[in-house]
Image 1 (tube, one colour):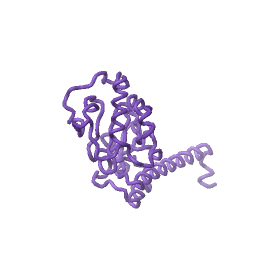
Image 2 (image 1 turned 120 degrees about the vertical axis):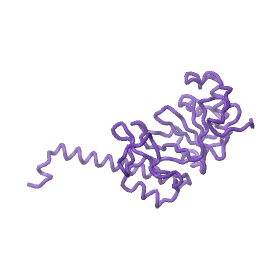
Image 3 (image 1 turned 180 degrees about the horizontal axis):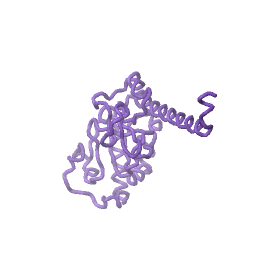
Image 4 (image 1 turned 45 degrees about the horizontal axis):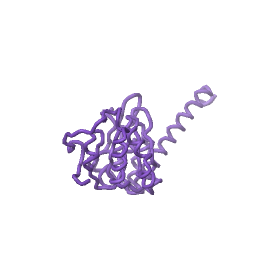
Length: 231
């Protein structure tokens, strides 16, 4: 009797399904990383969520949250390197801020309200929503927060070399998703002036309320990112 015959049929199916699911996930992560790099968006491999913790898939050591598993200065758009990183390991896909785009992050309810604004629908930006209930608007670089938006402490302009998880990365056990997929904008980051206009407009109408943003803050905003005094 062969080994396969001695293994119960149900177990063989479970093993096959598990292997197929893992292979499909690896392919989807690799395709996402390749798509980003193909359009000039630098990527890095990140730690993997497994059994309620993040792990470095290369060393199998636990990590402190979702973080790159190679130095940030190694971020690349080189397809050969991207294929090598995701050849066999299901790394998270991390987009690196500062070269191809900047990122303005706000609480998700606020961001979704802004994305429904007519001005934004006419000229959208790619938007990522993450399981920590944040919305991340990818905008053209270099971006600065205008005075109006910088008064809202929940609006954060990411610093250079910050990483943002891209779909279909798992974050805290749940999927990162596109609210506005980049193919809707031909992989072009949004106009930071338009994004900030709709964020200010929807914050003023109360979209930011309920997330500790019921009133703008007069504190100095430079600790939250780059700012500009231009309207």
